[in-house]
Structures are given as structure tokens and as C-alpha cells.
Length: 227
Image 1 (cartoon, helix red, strand yellow):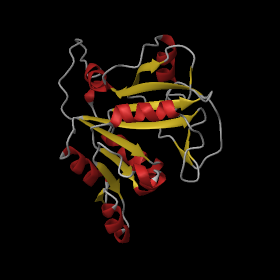
Image 2 (spheres, rainbow, N blue to C red):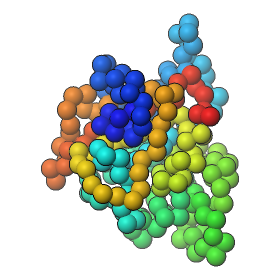
Image 3 (cartoon, helix red, strand yellow):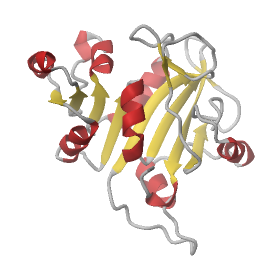
């Protein structure tokens, strides 16, 4: 999938699908994931697991971060992020947690699960309001036991995305119409990922500060986790 199409990966067929048949960003990620599980007979299969989504914003050249932050400011994307993740558990690495301003830690209305392999950080992270675990697998188990676990959202950063891709079946991607240098890049999604919708369906939205962006959803086909 091309960065401009919505994800930073080399799946040209997925980008072509997005260009050939654009449709609006779906109202329900769960319904989109269920629909993607349709068999050859066209019958969607019940979800065998919750929606496990990855959510990120990236530039057109795939940058998602620089020096522990995002090299842009887009309130409209922050509103989309809150709308998508509110009332569901969220999983992130320690550096992503630390990138949030103090007043937003923990993110309200969500169980905040932080992955850290540094034992000396556990007490501090817990005191700040995080559920601290040592691995993606432990994070998934903690999320499954949390309120709102019909959807679980993975927030990054880069290493966590790469480790968590095998658990995910949805990816909400905001593409910012700019190129910049960075030190963290969007995860690669393989050909099993399918374009599901984009907003706007043509061109770009323009934020109040003049930044152009579009938001797309990709889902894993046949209701299977990437292997």
C-alpha cells in the first residue's frame, strides 16, 4: 500500500483498489472487519476475536515521529483519535506514553496499557496511571480483560507496531500531506490487508490550520490475523 493511499507498505494492488473504488470511511470499524471476513459465498463470518486496531498518523513519506513527537499539529486528527479509541483499552510503548503531555496521562476514558521491559520504570509508570506489562502478548491479555475490549487499539510507537501487526485486523491511518525527516516510520502492511474506506473520498480535507490530510481504514481479509 502506498503512503499516499493510506499505509506505508509496498502493496501496489491495495493502492490500486483504493484509487479504483474509493468509498467513505466506515461508521463502524467492527462492521468493516466483519464484512472483510466474507467467504467465497459472500457470507461474513462472526468475529472470532475483538477488533484489534492500529491507529497512527504519517506523512506521505511514511514518517510517524521525530525526536519523541510528531512534526505536525492537526487538531482534527486528534479528534478522530479520541473518537476512535474512547471507551476502549489502548496499548502503547513507554516512549509513546512519555510523548503525551502530563495532563493527558493517562488518556481519560481508556485503560492505558504500557509495554516496558525496564523494571526500574514500572513503579513510576503505574503511579502515573498506566497498566504496565512486559510484552505485546501480556498487553493483549490485559486489554482483553479491560472494559470496552470489543475493540483494542494499538498506539505505537514503531517497534510496538511491528510487534503487534500479527495481532491486528484493522488499521486507521491519517496521511498528512507533507514530507519531512523523521526517526520513526509507519509499519509495513502486507497484501493480506485490504483498503476499506477513506475520508474524503476525493482529494484532501483541510484542517483549521491549513494542514491537508485524509483518513483511511485498512482491514485484514478473511478475519485472520497476519502471520
